Length: 285
Image (tube, rainbow, N blue to C red; front, side, top):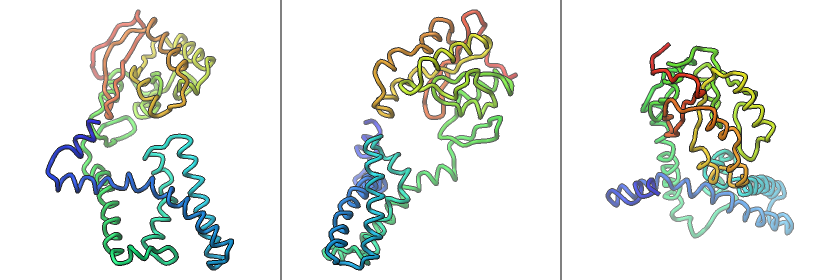
């Protein structure tokens, strides 16, 4: 809500219009497969009634069937712009058909077709420009043991972990960001890269707890606010799986927080150690 207010509730009308124009692909992209599903029935009718060359009709029936199937897979799993973008190279085909206007043309829009083409091209250019700009001029550069990476901001997790560990040390990132192990050249004491409530089993939770007992010196990076991400990202997760987190309960009883750390994306992690261990100061090793 705060982002929406910042984008569309502030600034001049011109700035708001350009902003809406730049993000319009977020609305257009999900609409394309819905339109394509309608085209599937249109071309099925043309194929049945021989109203179009058979090879042309088969081409459109096949591709629109594929796009309709992709739409169903997105809607049933997680209907958000990220998942639409995963299959965008296929979804963009109907947009190209409309802009080309060879087999699919709307006579009412023909007089303004050049304007629509230019507006669409510029909209997608603006849509991608922000991402391109962050690559050209990244806000932050982070030195990791795997090399320099760019991010939207500095990452306190990587900096602190690298100051407190040596390459090859064991660090458990719980429940869900094994990339930190890779970037800091550490490894997980557990056999699993991550633990996902509702997907992982009770036996796997027991194995993670046992791995911590066998590696008492291994610190834990615990993202304590992870549960708040579950309703929007994994809405089918059973409530019981979130409420009964045995690993988190174990950390709460056997470990103590030593440092509050913030990732480049704003996620908050607690660096935790056994209650009998000392919390070291942030001094590079």
